[in-house]
Image (cartoon, rainbow, N blue to C red; front, side, top):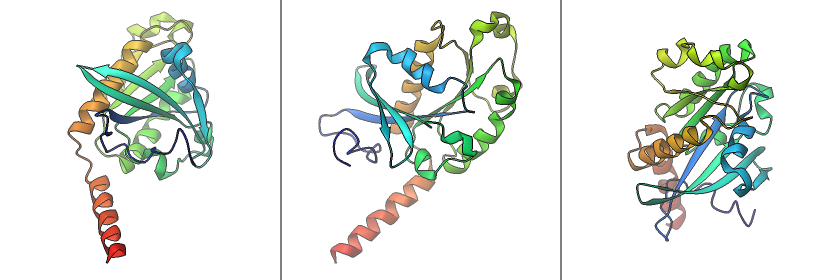
Length: 206
């Protein structure tokens, strides 16, 4: 596919213009507000695009972190989470994860563990941020301490896609974490895959 998605598989590279490209994936049950959160962050800037090859929606954003130019791709499941399992390509080369639940639906919180386990099978060490969305329904929920993020030693953000509470702070932190991970990757699975691909290319050249 030509055009905007030509380079979706080149996240581990630095562009010829010196721009770092990072991939941030959104996980969580259907209708927890993943897309709405990204749209709220990007406001009028965003242009969502369906990438039919992967059955997802991709949002592209430009940011600057400590003087470093960053091109960010936010990957959203486009409803595929209804099938309970996402394709491995969704996780491939991801630099950070935003894991979202809806504070008004307890089942979405209980299902965080399932999504987290699937994430760690594919990306064992990328930074993951827990997100409690729809706090505008009951702001008292922000006083509650949730055991899931504590158990897995991850930060939690209390946000509202509706009124924008903490949305910018959340995604700025996700971008910063993704860039830091890209500069210091620790996932050996992707490294092995890259080595195998390089070996295959060498064999083809011979």
